[in-house]
Length: 142
Image 1 (cartoon, rainbow, N blue to C red):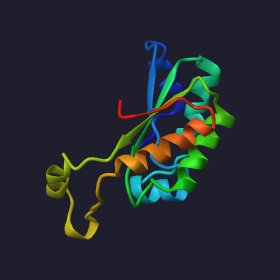
Image 2: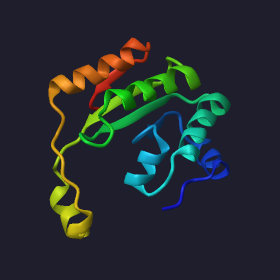
Image 3: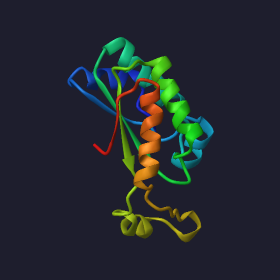
Image 4: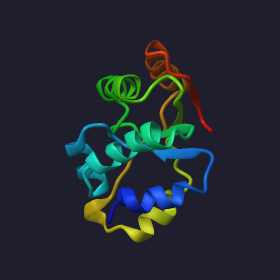
């Protein structure tokens, strides 16, 4: 998998008025373990979008139990947004769902199989409150 370089992103972003930006995990080692790429470039591009282009940003976080739903990861993500960006950035917490699991199973072999459940409503509310505590507008879904 290749990451978009800033020069490419800057050209494309000159045509948009809202950025929907996915974050999977703030810890680069965990991010690379599950996505195949580290997240340094992803986070640097996000900061550049905010500070250089001044575009509105909605950060989308798929909440995947057993991968990125820990309090530690969500607090680190909220702290990153609060310190490196600002409260104008909105967060959409997207609960993992199993709708595409059959398709995924056809694409993966048994050795690389992934299985988890959807987060509960209570868990999603708890994670949402972490972002709100940092002064970040957060919603579930979206």
